Length: 468
Image 1: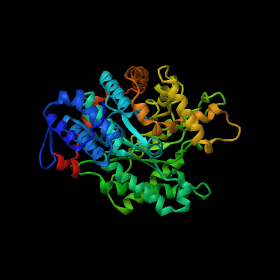
Image 2: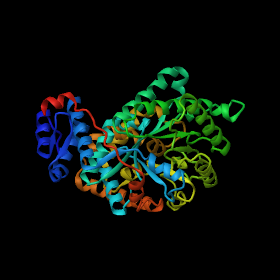
Image 3: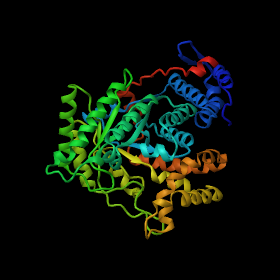
Image 4: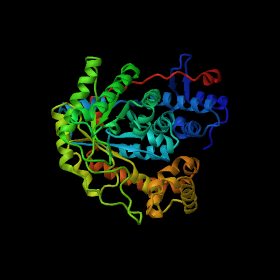
């Protein structure tokens, strides 16, 4: 399916499936044609349109059609509030980072959710991933919501900004510039319908300070600042789910003392600035994992020793003492399969999963060898400064191949249908396994009970308005 080449063609097709009022309100009049053909051209245009105007028009059409058909970008805050108050629980929400084939993989996720009656699942992308996968928030949310329309999903759609992380080196050199970059990203994400944002200022924890509270002070003060910034920008009727973090993933394991000092300090900082403000809904901790796992010389991944005792204890304190939904586990997708059923029993509110899905794409028997060889050759030429002394080529490729998704986005989206089907079938089996292990099936009713989706109107881009 080719992108639209003009705004007039896009507008003409849009008028066949929807009525658009002068105020921008859209009513879908032919949902069948929208799902069968129009949405595919819209998402191709949203990602590969020849101009910014075409992309903006397609993204507006997708998001507005999603609102009209009941696939509404939402905050998971209400569900996490209920978990924190003990009104429901026993499941861990999977948050899936999608680095490539975003429309197709999102469709597979919605199909899995429909087959299992699941409602508690999140689509997310990190600040760093937005760069090397070349997916800004507006494009990412368009792909997810287009997939929701295509698969007939109705109800909340949870889209999350993962690891909106302050870069410690950039902060040390130009603090105001780096902090401003996170504010700009929050603003961009909210405008794109990201109503779940994880703030990560744990990179600024200073272990040289004498007390734990002073070690965490910059971390919790800045998170409080960002929380209020988000509250000032979030749309009416939406309470964004904000996450905090006490320990940088891949570093030392977190402790209860760190958790308590962070959360006490965060509350003091937040309420001192603006009494009554809604705080974070969850807290990310470090329990022994690392992002992507640790590659061995042959390219396989070292076994991870995850400290479930720490996870259980931290999650319990977060829930019972502070009313949060629990602890968040990062860097978990490459863990042994037999461990996943332990997370719902370990006070884990959310688990972030990314690298294993990337691995499954590259290692699928259907992935074209010629394309893979081309991508790996590009990595060797363009990421060679990331190579470490003594590491094998297999280790280098494993560590850097995530960066192939941006440069080769068009080739990946353009894979033959049969190739995609084989890759997606494998991913869908994995998604179902994870959903079942995390007790996500049959959470759709919990989501309906605790979350009232708020369709947020989006102004019609001026260029499209003229065409319509």
